[in-house]
Image (tube, rainbow, N blue to C red; front, side, top):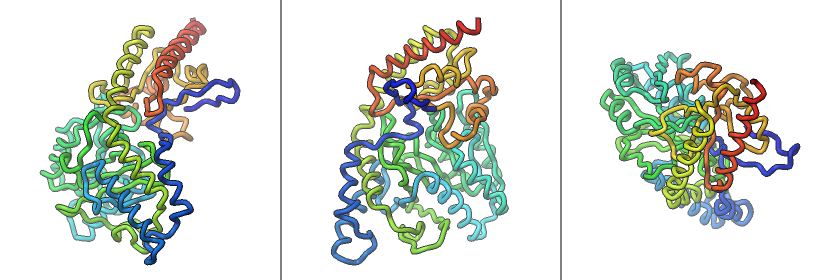
Length: 396
């Protein structure tokens, strides 16, 4: 949660990069001409549309290149919410139309709400949702997935990196289990792209469908993409009717400036993500080592070994997270997923990992990003320790 800074006149420290990222200046610069100078409809058949079409296809290539895909496998959407819905519902409905006898769809209890709700919504269409549990570290047991796949399964959806904890799943291993059982494998790549010391590759990981969101990697909001594998070909049924502008799978006039921005954001992520991730790993170690020395009993929620380099989810001893953060109005972090900002309940992800409501209430996530300065990391350590120390003094 980002507390109001108007009351304190303090410069905010933004460490909520898993919620959203600011648009990189280079992304904004690339988008601007397409709001006015190159405003033609991508699908128009005249002279002014030609440079627009060329730019959109360049962006499509840039998105594909980030994940090791082909341009023809990228479908632009309004964001990851639509991409997840289109992948899960579209692939399942197509198989049902093809008279598949399988009815199970598998996902994980810590998935993003767009995945969980998409899977659960299919129950009304005769589908059996099957939700797998995770351990205290937020990790899925591959053996549990293999056992669940003993029942004929249409599709499995498992995210690469969790949006609240940053915990990573062994996607290549899990996709192999799914394909061995004849199930389609969908992966939400939203949190992981551009954030690892190594590139993400949908071919290497053997992914059939993958969701992408530009605003999680320093691009604009309102634009995302769905990777749809062509060989072997994955077929999906569109969510809504229209002109079928995106390969017949997604209708609607393309938001050209946003698409251009998403392409440049992906290009930058591929070029600079490795360097950023190395810097974040150094900061994360310093952050945890220092705070755990200052605050005995401070815990990291989720696996520290299998985690995004810049991501942390912390559980403070004895002091509720909201009480702690009210003492640091300039610190912008989240107590749960931003998609649940209106929900006062504790994080369902942490509860699914086995934390009690009380433990979850003492937890919040933070994430370093491209615009984070080392000085801000050091300030945050001091602010958190001071706030916790003062809060502890009040209860003794």
